[in-house]
Image 1 (cartoon, helix red, strand yellow):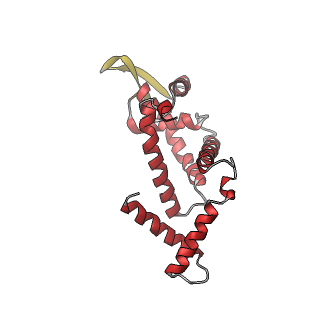
Image 2: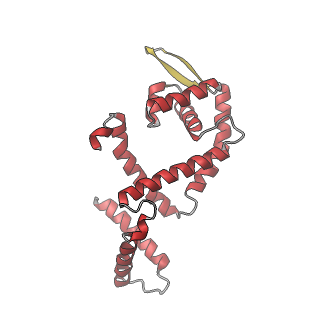
Image 3: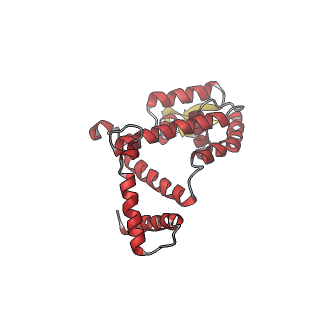
Length: 204
């Protein structure tokens, strides 16, 4: 951890301490005692509430649960749109942002395995929300883009999906959201190159 990250974490901890310091003893000794108690609480048995094995296993379990919650919320708010899954909307939103994208590039941008990604693309093609056409720079590949119906569907999704996004982090304070985003980006920065290079087994 570099000096910037350490300072950032310390500032966030001081903010948490101030919120909980109901007795008003906001001195250094009180802060250190609070920090020690916080560490003990976080390393206690209650932190392993799902797996009961290790912090790493618990993190993986919670990330998996959050992913399922997010998919459920997004699926609910997409009712009444042509999209039936969060993946269909996300793939279409990426095309809306990037314009024409090759199939393999789209799948890699979303960090999906090829078979799952191709399944999502096939469903969107069948629904007439996207279309494929020859890549003028590479005749061996095809590009994807939104159809007019796809653009309308994405615009409709943009009106409803923010409700699901807000729900996912609803009980977090703004500074907690920023810290969580920082940590998630750090994890993604580690895993995404491994995914792109197909090196998963080398790390297991």
